[in-house]
Image (spheres, rainbow over the protein chains, first blue to last red):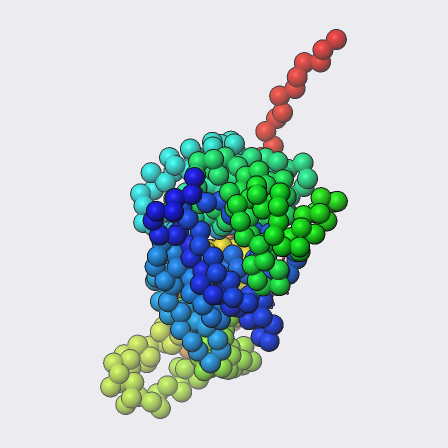
Length: 260
Length: 241
Ligand SMILES: Nc1ncnc2c1ncn2[C@@H]1O[C@H](COP(=O)(O)OP(=O)(O)OP(=O)(O)O)[C@@H](O)[C@H]1O
Ligand SMILES: [Mg+2]
């Protein structure tokens, strides 16, 4: 259940993002409360990935403010656009915000175990033995305990994505960002990954999930956001919003998505 | 051909191996450190430093190593007062350190290009992911970028080590008594260059044979992710009748 009593885990205030002359985000404001599972929908090019990547500063917004747990991320303005003002702050905040990528992006030269313990040990400074024990438990949880010593290239896509989710969990993040976590998978592998994400939602984790899986968004998300040309066009509780969209565009989007 | 003489020469040349190996190892280590720095400067295109590094690589790759050795050994004497005041003269008047310097600088130029290729081949996504997990600056290089780049550069880099071992033979021209230096001395005493050089050639061949094996082993050991996994025999279900 969303917890509205404390400050939001993620807060975006009037975020704008330009790529050269192209304005991709045109003023996004959004607050994610603890325990919320937000599905982010929108057609290709509407700015979903860019919005998600602004949250952990993989893209630097050209205007507006991002705050995590109430702490505003400091940026500075340079001749070439926005720049990081305090790398240490961003590195620290990034350990609170774990991202899961469409193409998994496991570190190819490391075993699955090494992938899971890398940042906890070398960024968060935790004890190796604790991290290893936890890695085992997490891999067990996502159902690939037997792959602990394998290398990413030796796993199927679904297994790699589950390993990547375990890597995110190993950070003990306050919020998890998923950018189309199942889009690169064979259709028969999609279910196993969605099952893991669904289980995380049921644990009450705070998550923002960019997805094209309508059924998943409807059933698992507590809230749905529809982006259109860099603006939030629809924002509401998942079930009601799907049943009764306020925006005509979202209505059409749902209708065409159903035809696929 | 006088095999007894070749055998005898061979034994005398063995005495030069420690110096040959020391020259190669020390110069290679220094070259590696320089190469990493140059490769990073050039990959990140750090202004001014990038241009200087580019010129450095251009000059060192474009001139013969022998010329570089002579310039350092005979040429640095002109700057003796400056070098003395810097406390460097005691090193740079010594042919050993001049050789190390020449070999290291020369190799660093080639090695930096090999490393640069390795750095370029690191998948952008893996770097970005490391950033998203809180890594930046040196830690990002140490933990993710360099380990991947070095693995990719390893075969070419190993080649550079072999070239280095062979290049040490040029230091005999500035009086060092490594394998080739001793060989030159034996030739001037015996006037039998063919036998002496055969013995010397065998020694270089043996050293480089061992080095290629070691490099191949290192490559094998560092890149299990590029091999097919060990196939675990599948348990066969007994067929039901
Ligand atoms: N690094 C970049 N440089 C220039 N333009 C970019 C860059 N990244 C994204 N864009 C542009 O920004 C717009 C939004 O891209 P974004 O990736 O956020 O869309 P999306 O909603 O995630 O789309 P998809 O569903 O295809 O993933 C697109 O027009 C894209 O071409
Ligand atoms: Mg996208």
